Image 1: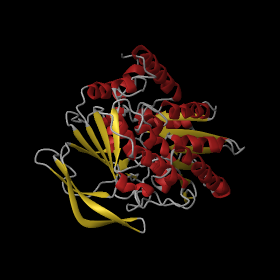
Image 2 (image 1 turned 135 degrees about the horizontal axis):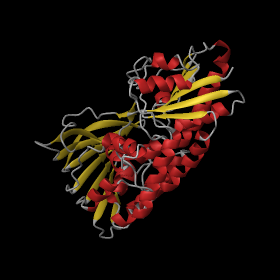
Image 3 (image 1 turned 90 degrees about the vertical axis):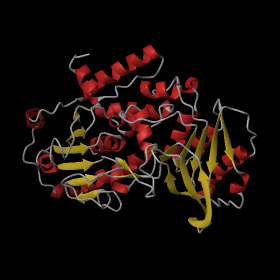
Image 4 (image 1 turned 180 degrees about the vertical axis):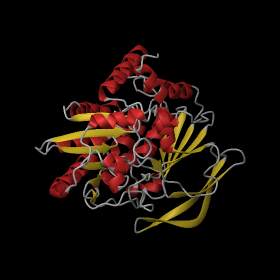
Length: 435
């Protein structure tokens, strides 16, 4: 009997899981569901628009999706359009790969003031993600604080610091490009609570900041004192780049990135909007940040927090509220129900980290096959009819290929890799010949 598997979330983890299933050497049908009409998740909505080489992995996902036993159900949200219980009646096994869809908060006074945002909101906005197109960012502000020193924080820093010419070959959204053209941002503060050894960014990301056309980078030499990376190769490489930046003289460029270590945000201040952020000075004890009595005010008009992601509960599936994940053992929640990616392990690693993670989960599924309860309804056509009866417009993979081709065509006209659809309504209208 053919194994029927549903994958909930058609991002990198989902595509790697599908590939692992097809490589098992058994008869298997895979249907991947995504709440958006577009597949590939963070590859499309999270990877920086000026990092086009990283997006080349989409060709690999395309090959997986072209398998004759793969189907894409875009614009279908599990828990809204279809309950988990209903879904499980159509599939022998379900793998949730829906990632960590929200962000962690700082938990400080003033965090909800206008002008204070999650970095993920800004990233989603400039990447054309439909969820974030109603956000309004006041780039008339000259000073911006970015809390966090992971690669997402670096991406936000870099996008704010780049010239229009540097962004011209990216697939940044048209709305974002228009606003960035009017940007008055001059000083960008990249703030971490611990030291250079503990910073989460990679050498490539921090090194790239030192090669921007019209932006200096300032690293305080004193912050690099007494830093011993030991045998931590990642920290060794980061420290090497930071030391080079710390002795590089300012060139009088119009913008400047200030890299701050050993500082924690204590309060965001302002009346109608962000005006100031109070930072506490830290010292390290066994690599942990310990707050001292020293304080520092930083007058900024915008704050972006980038301190981690958090999973979102799915109705009908057990959830760990503290960790923001679906509890599991090597990907198994229970026989027939599995997880992979950030919803499995938390927000860690890079895109490639999801491949072994998904393979591990699929191996757990494989070992459970003898005890799986076979689904009652083995007809995908029946499922499609059910969704249609609920007025759900299902976007197929061939529909996505049409959207993809149109985005690339529009991008070519604008001299870009693609010009993205940023509205689900616009995507569906195009597919139905309404524009």
